[in-house]
Length: 472
Image (cartoon, rainbow, N blue to C red; front, top):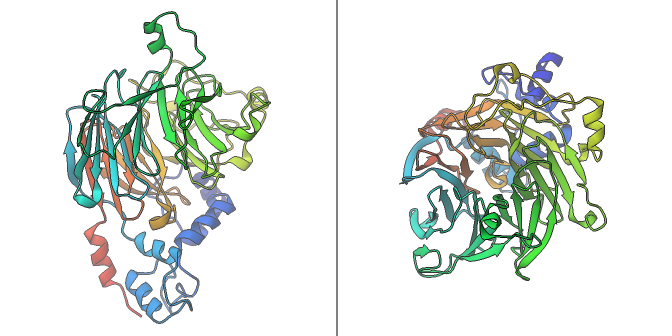
């Protein structure tokens, strides 16, 4: 790979149609994450020994099975990376099949941690929880009340007993989804307890109370004891469910905080993204005597719509209104934001509004002068709503891919290391705000503003191609 080609891949300027050399993919990215991804998604060295006249990777499933039976690795079984290498041949690009159709815009699409449940949230106060293992039967049909504008987010507890949902108000509601009843109408058939995130505010009247701020994003901690939320008052909130009270409010940004998540299982580190164009890293252990974030990640030209953690407390990706996804390593973060802004300031395009305007053509190939991201991925569209992006599952893909919804009614899948567009899933007739990849199987579900929930599975062509490959 030439130096010019390497620079284009790293900056995300290379087009998906250009050829990539799999043996040179490490050159386009920080070595650590490239090596980690290869270790989790490529087969054991003895399983991938080169045959005369044949390329080393990828190896067909037939070859992988034959080499397992011949005990090439010396273990008599597939490693998790061997399994990922096989499953990476079967991406969820076939279909789709229609799961459901609603009369309002889809805002949330999420599998549970074990993939047995699927949550779909819609603008008109409707949340449905489907039992995946029972043929996508509706297990819980939730009707929210007293919402403002839409359901902005929903999150299942790790034990799958409770669901929380947020709106453009300081009240987050929690629902017991383990009850026997299918219908759950707020405070009529079941209690939807309100969790007040506005503690400490002094309101003169109820109207101002509900207009004080809205919550864009809410997530359970890994142990299910806390909620973290991102709000329109530029703050991050943490709610203690055991004590049933707000435990922390942190003024993290200068604009709306659109997204927040825990970095890993410990719950100590939190990532956030805002309309100020910044991703920030907060270490709760350092917040007692320090009112500043632990670090800042600079690189987006416009606001950040979503953040997903790799789960290792080190890497994350963010979707931005500058029409890009960026990959970050928090070891490169700066603790001094003023140094970035003063040394080489960037002026945002304040006349542009992503809700109803196309992104300016003159800015599409621009790069922030202080960009410290590892890589940039382009091709999808982040307009009209807070489009979400994710790492592909660790169990089935080794987190080799990044996938995202898009305002052009599609779902995009990118190769993490090369930046290549692996697939574009076209079906919907409205923006795809959210989508979710099953944690164990090659299944992806997308929901759209057209009101449809669609399921994508692996392609039958992959099976045919595999059967035509050579055997050992």
